[in-house]
Image (cartoon, rainbow, N blue to C red; front, side):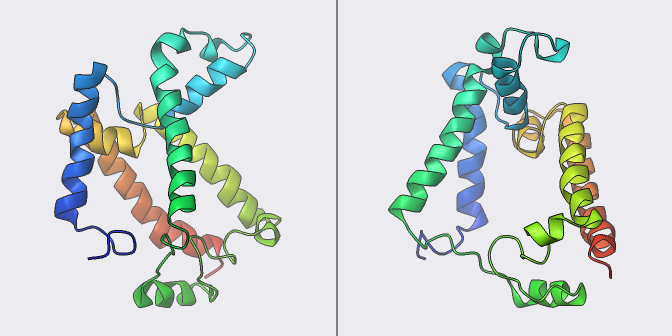
Length: 187
């Protein structure tokens, strides 16, 4: 197994991810998740006139902001240290599914036919970007966290709300993949 180019087996990657939850609790009762970081960044930068952003973000959110910055720095360091190691490989089955939607240029992380300046200039592209962004932000706020926070940390803590939120994330993903995306690309 080439650690840089091959996916890690679930029995290696899963426990490593799972060990983050107790490690963060041991280090100082830290929560694992990304969605709350945006609120903390806004609280640090938006003028104090917005009630939603008036709270002690330094006490609550400094860890989350550090975690978010670390994600970007880690991604940049990995890209510099291992150029070309993160090439996206799309399976033949996924290519066939995309072809059924009329998307034939399946290269990179997101096909250009789905996300490009030309596509975003259409009502469907704007709906995907603005509507999708709103739904993700609203959903994470309403659910009290994002997929990583609920599906990793919340389930590890055996929280019923995290189980319900995780089931909702998966149901929403299935509806998006099988109903919304085909409708948006015009199939």
